[in-house]
Every structure is written in structure tokens, then in C-alpha cells.
Image 1 (cartoon, helix red, strand yellow):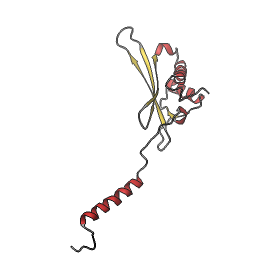
Image 2 (tube, rainbow, N blue to C red; image 1 turned 90 degrees about the horizontal axis):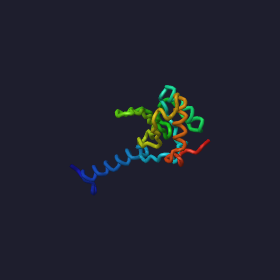
Image 3 (tube, rainbow, N blue to C red; image 1 turned 120 degrees about the vertical axis):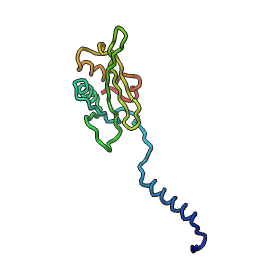
Image 4 (tube, one colour; image 1 turned 30 degrees about the vertical axis):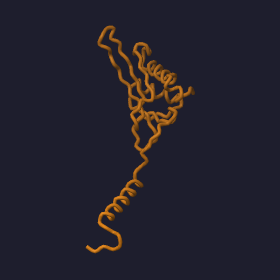
Length: 148
């Protein structure tokens, strides 16, 4: 094998590795994600099409938030709303409604409401209104959402 100057197969390999890593790093997207400091910085994704989901979406829109009903790739910061009920097994067997807003990039819960279903009103519209009011007045969201 003919060598010229100080070049050795080991040096050539290291040089190629450095150039390859620089190329890959220049093509990679930024990995640091900073969550918005306000809830208004998020688009709220609500895929529920039942009356409770529609009522919560309408209430959040009324408060000035951007709400959408389908996943859209490449969008800005998004918080997904998910809601579920839980029924206690022991008497009096209370049924609870749990609503969570989670950052779709980090999975962090950014807001939540949990309350007995009976205390939120008789209809889904009443419950949706109570959930939106609770989200707007919760201690965790005071810094994130101001009244309209």
C-alpha cells in the first residue's frame, strides 16, 4: 500500500467519521422543544364527537383558544384533550369524570379536571360548561389562561 505524507488508514477513517457525523447533524431537526408558556400557545385537539366533546370544544373556542378536531402533522404545539369516567366500586359508587389536556410532544399533563359526574350538572352541555370553567379557574392554569 502506498502512503503519501502522514495519511494512514486510521486517520482516513476518523476523518470520514467526522465528516459523516457533521453531515448527519446538519440534516437533523432541532431536538429541543420548549412548551408554550400560555395555553393560548397551544392548538387544542379534541377528537371526541359526542355532545360532551363538542360542548368542551365550543367552550374553549368561546374563551379564545384554537380548537381542531383532527390530527395535522407538522403543526405547532398541540394539546390533546382526553376524557374518561371512573366508577368507584365501594358504596356509594360515585362516578367521576376525568378530563386531561396533554402536550402531544412531551406527554406532560398541562391541565386537568376531576369531579363527580353528578356535581357537574344534569346534561352533557352543563358538564362541558363546568369542565371549561374549571379549566379556566384551576390554579395550574391561572398562568396559562386568562378570562376572555
